[in-house]
Length: 633
Image 1 (tube, rainbow, N blue to C red):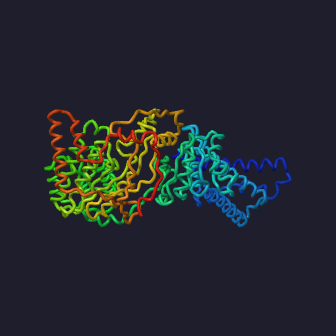
Image 2: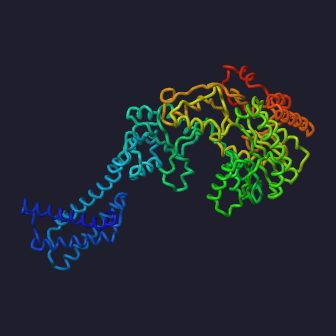
Image 3: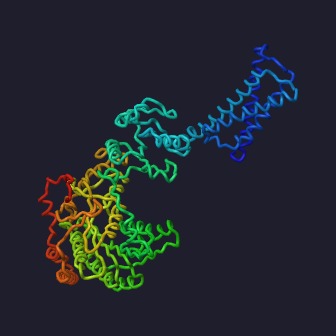
């Protein structure tokens, strides 16, 4: 029918005109005294009026409009075309001498016809936007938090999009002038603080937060209130993100767990990275991993001479390669190499081929429980892999080498943490021994990274539960993947020689609260809809991570969120003794298949390495979220 839409609409208008004329004739039959003036030429006048009005509609192109999307402009154009058609008729009728019937009654016919056309078009649009949509998909009642410009625009798009799954039931807004008023037929039912109780009374389980200009502090507080109940919340992006001109409904996203972290997103100095990356050849080891791939995304924004991705896992390397090529095109100076940092000859060939100016070393085994059962792999890959990469960088005149470290290297209780502390020692030992600037960057848990707790919780919630936590007392520091990558890049720009950079991670989060919030954000009630089960601490796991900026041996950088921690120097001779002991332990493990000797040696070469049971027993039930204190003056 869409092929003949204009013809059908034309026939419909002709029928409506006939109805209007019939209405006039009916009136003259009931009230004969109203039939005044040139009745003998009535049909000629009616035909002329119809022709003039239809011609005006064609001039105004009202038959080209898609009335399912009509707004006030289309309706005004229809009225204007009818008015112009009537004026043209009056002019022609008087000049031609066919005789003009009563102006009032003729105006009544024209007005009735226009009214009929408006009603039919509006009814058709309402049918398409509501009735047909409900029959096809069903709808979800939703409340909009915020009755400002963004909320009204969102309402408009939801109401006029036949494919929308939502029907807006009400607004909530703190503007007293809007309370108990209606916006496009939708009531403003109360203030934001009243939204939860009102939504429960109206049986609404979905809400859209539509105040993009609100500051992060108030936004976070409101989102926390909304997630105290079984309400699924979506949110609009910030005001700056709206500038990309996408329709608002396309920018709705679920509330992310980082929205509830308890601190604002850390903004780092992107401009400082230009001097580090622009026009340089940059190598990222482990470039297919969570942090490595985000580093690659950030690096290409600064126009490097070439980006080299080095990873042993070809699937991840392929994914980030295709993503970058799709976004930036085949002209992007990108190379992907497969290999292991354990292989010094492979690294020699890699460095000799590309001659990188900057190296970001992200290749590492990072899973704490897995490295407890395979400590030899942590030592080979993390420690000796870092040693191989550091020596290759030194031999080939790399300008800067940045090691990715972890908060688990602070007073480690796991093989993985101890191995990363040894990686830091490898970097420290290069002080004064190389033309390359070496540095390490230490940060906490990364939200959404491969193997982290957030993707695990999401999978468990999607499966209907239970959600598993190892211990309800555990607290952790979190940051987002972009924050982590940008921190590494800015620290690289700051690095002068052998610094250990740490980030003020803000206030830590209880894992049990993280699980509860994620369940609520998914529209469920913890312990009622989805259970949370304690499974016991895993090997090498401690109840809390050390506060990265608790040390007094800290120095502020130009960025108030980044500090330099001063560690005792490690000489090349001291490092060589430690590595010799580790290498002997690896050889013994190969002969005896007994990995216990590796753990024993780790206690000797990393003095701060303690068993997790010892640390956890000391903390016991007293583990609490610490108050944030100034790191240093």
